[in-house]
Amino acid sequence: MLTEQQRAEFDLHGILKVKSLLSEQAVSRARHAILSRFEALGLSRRGEWRLEGRSRAKWPDKGYSAKAVGNKIEEVENLLGEPGVEPIVGSTLEHANLDHQMFKRPQILVTLPNKGEWFIPKDGWHVDIARIGSGRRPGVQVFILLSEIKPQGGGTLVVSGSHRLLNNDGFIRSRDVAKQIQKKPGFCKLMSEIESASGELLRSEDSKHSNQQDDLSIVELTGSPGDAYFMDLRALHSAAPNISDHPRMMATHRFLRADTLPELTLSK
Picture 1 (tube, rainbow, N blue to C red):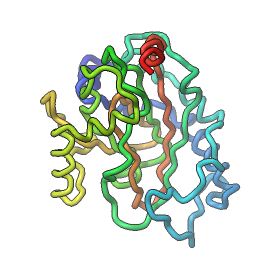
Picture 2: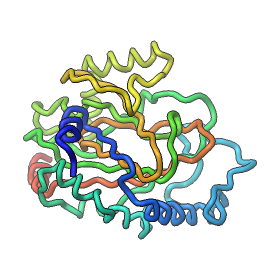
Picture 3: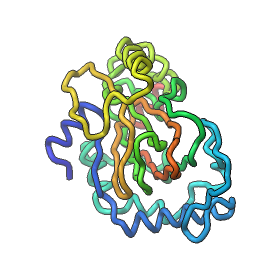
């Protein structure tokens, strides 16, 4: 269960890292099951990546067809049953009942090494669900690290604090949320500061957070296998290039509160 400090951090920033949440055995089984799919593509063998002699793709090309890998992998789905995952989700969602129809299974996130310099994308920022009229937190997304992910290694980027924007503006379709957030002075200021800093992140995962309610910062999801991040579904986020020498491997799943479905349905 989350401590009061962790709950306060999640409420303020919309993103929370829990180190070593998942067992090494479960993560290893999921990683090997994913690698077996890449073996058919000639990119892995016997549970190890085999990328020698292969030219790097340029972002946003991930270097393979996601459709060829798919998301129906039992070992990945089993990660959600690991002790700690659902209790933390429940703690962030007031232990409300969950809907399992809109988001039925976890998604596999793999980015092979890209060529070129690393940068924070200007495009691709999005949310995965609409803002509902009540402004409540509709759900939580978990990102489970299946490999070591270092800075500039393809980790998802999250705008910390963005979940607190637009909550008094009524129902907003998911495709329009990013557009409206990017018009906010705080987001424009954030992106201009990033450009002036040559693309450097403004906050690392372990740096001290600001307590200013209107502060925004970009967080890069990095860490070790078994670490997990929990993100408010209202938070703006984006994929990012991977200029490391190793593929980025994550599994992610969205947990949706069942009692928000009427708002989502009636507001369409």
